Image (cartoon, rainbow, N blue to C red; front, side, top):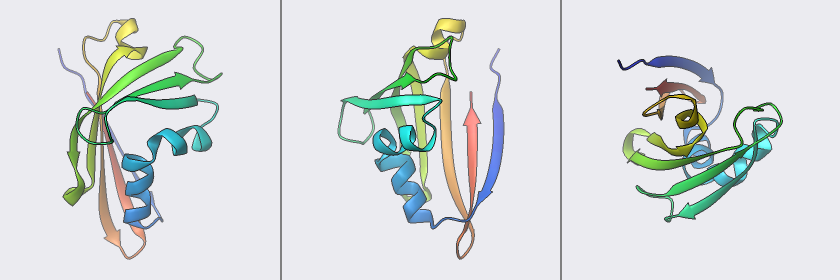
Length: 120
């Protein structure tokens, strides 16, 4: 049985700045934004495109998971969409056979965006 969680958030950030932080600078930005959840992020394979693998080492607010490896499996810069598949650790250690997170940025107005987050 496939379960899916969706959520949306409205943010007041330029789309290119947000896309750069989410898709290009995730390894350096994530620990700065949520240090209690993600201690650090390493790029273990790839150059930022499809197939790139990240190692997320979790922080103090994630006591039951120490790490998770995620691979970029979907990347569409034209529509600002990125999909990351967990390939080791994390959610897979808790009975999930598959876990994918997809982010899509959608412009609303000049400096407002919707972020759609989908976990399958």
